[in-house]
Length: 497
Image (cartoon, rainbow, N blue to C red; front, side, top):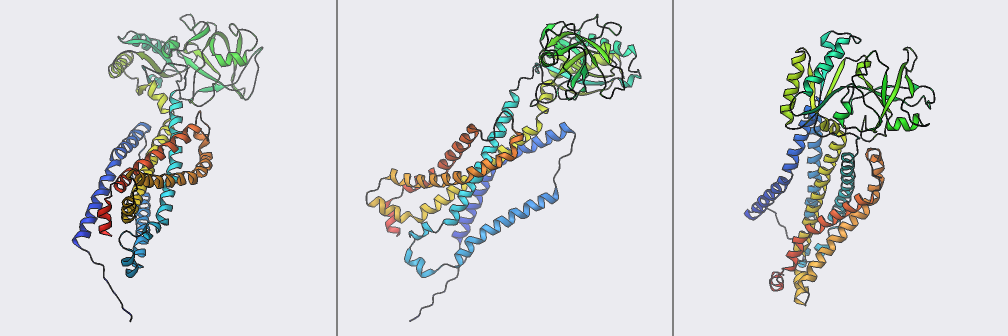
């Protein structure tokens, strides 16, 4: 006799209550990322204001992201639904609530969890590498003291003076004297450039100089107190002084690197060299070396040490003023007083780009900072999602194997042994994800090797840190399912069966 059993799934108050419970649980989980999202929004707004660019929402990108998100949810939500439609009621009634077959029918779930762990490893290693690059850049010895230095720009073209007008030099001298007289100001000096502001480059030549047409020297016009403001030590010779005027012998201070490689035969003090345009259209400028200064970073923190010479602005035609002020005390108060002192000399002078030297140095690796913070954020999201996947999978397996666990405990299995079995399975899933993700990680890092500083692509410390964090997060996510499994009452479990 053939018996046909039909059934109809319908919503019940219990199902509605369960759905509401999981909805609230997901919302609470998403609240974890609220501080990171707020921080990310603030970082974008800060960069927009600092760089003078407008960063806004891209509707096309937002629509694409929304479509991908909805499509992913529908795809992975449809698979369990299709699987449920193939449910054989008689087999289900025979296998019971805690049948062993339910535990084995989770290959797709395990594959997805392993894939999540592998992706998390890739992102975690990348985040570690970028964060360590950021740390290395912050630890670079710039050669100057970037702390407590105010810097601003003055455009002297508003005065109408020509480049060779001596009144322009007098104007700069008066401003330096007024600012140096302010309380809290330790030293002040003009310069043509500071760190990460570009430079005036040319080749040099002279008797006894090793000339290389591919080597450019960075020239910087500075005031007498520039080395005192920047706290760049002089290794030999003297600094500039009142005796270095437009009518006196033209002098220069060169960097340690320049002295070592371009003047190898003895001391460069007293030696003469010529600065000329590369195309030969301008007459060469004769300079006599009077000092050697310590090497400094000039363009970027990750560039090699450059050849630099310093020339007194009293002997050069220069009309743009970059003022550096070493101060002690409150930055805002000093900035106001410095601006008032400048306008007391000439109220027409426009003052722009008021900042600190420390901020200017930090701005030189803004891209690295953004990449490090974004990679850390997405790595955290990936690890969090992996932990949710591990927790959900193991919770499901424990609930399906309650009868099996009850039988084992009734036969004498210890609670610690049951918990260890759950933790062991989680550990194997995490290790499988690490094994899958490791070659992908090593291959992908080659693409970002040029973005690293002070590190190799296969940095063992970053790899070890990422693997250690993943193992810890994975084992932590399995603690609750393991505890639930070890707390199963065998009498209750067997009665339910």
